[in-house]
Image 1 (cartoon, rainbow, N blue to C red):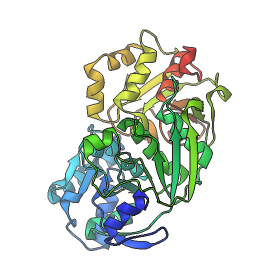
Image 2 (spheres, helix red, strand yellow):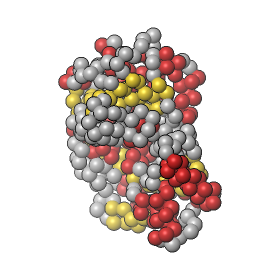
Image 3 (cartoon, helix red, strand yellow):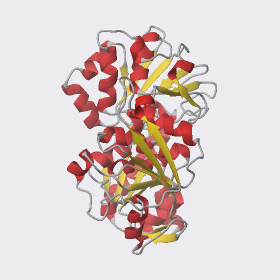
Image 4 (cartoon, rainbow, N blue to C red):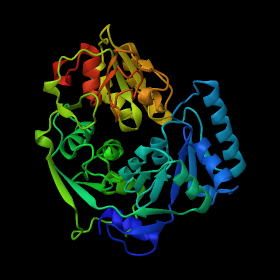
Length: 408
């Protein structure tokens, strides 16, 4: 069996195969501030259930509009806080960080678990060897009420990685290359397994897993080996099995991988950096569940050290969590970024979704380390978003145009 099939078999209580429709009992269900008010309403008003099925299997994170930007948002967040207190549910309040980062940091997401969240990037939990996937309001409400849901067992695509990154190339470039090769619908309702990455640290795995949904995947899983196995002790039953059947295999040689950039307005419109180098930008954004960790900020700081950002550029930094921000405070990482001219915002989803803390205006051109560049994603529909790595983001902030780290 593939990793997804092993996890879903355990959750269903019987062996499963791709295409099977099964009822499963998730190990953890996450809600965030944007959808939790409607989840609560559906559970109570439509399903007629007053108490959640198991408070210890639910977590709520206030991260999407954190802190609240309007009175309406503040009122909704207060309703969620009151519900969490009433039900005795774990609540991670404003400033703690992005839900996907927080659940990994708190060790709530662990290898072999089945996790559903009210966010499309819940596939991020595959970084620790879990099956994570996003669901909408009604589906999450049903799980909160009953502890069960149904799922169709997906086929699995294997991404076989060879070699190591060249200088100036990182996990974000690999994630974008997967989008380029598979295309935006190339893994629709499939699971992706990334092999050959036993050496890759957890933060790089989080970058890869979070972007699995950008090619339509139901889940993206990195086998829990190497540092993840040492830290999280995966269950003995969860292993890469040699005779597992994969629907498709994609081979990527990291020695040949150049910095990648996704052009507006499609995540799979990816090219080598050289094809868009020199494009003027007005905003550079470093953050999100894809690239808002200490290692990402540190990579940018190495390039920005002793330099100033271009006068025509606004550099926005949004840490993925308060713990990641604290790590950057313990050395000179944040000092370097702020001395270079960056603006630091509250840990959370920040400007990624265009709601606050750096919304793009008409005609703005942004180079973002985020995961989506759809028209209007970060603000004005006339703005344009390029996606790239933290290294390219730092070089671009200095140059005022899209540039690679070797240029600066």
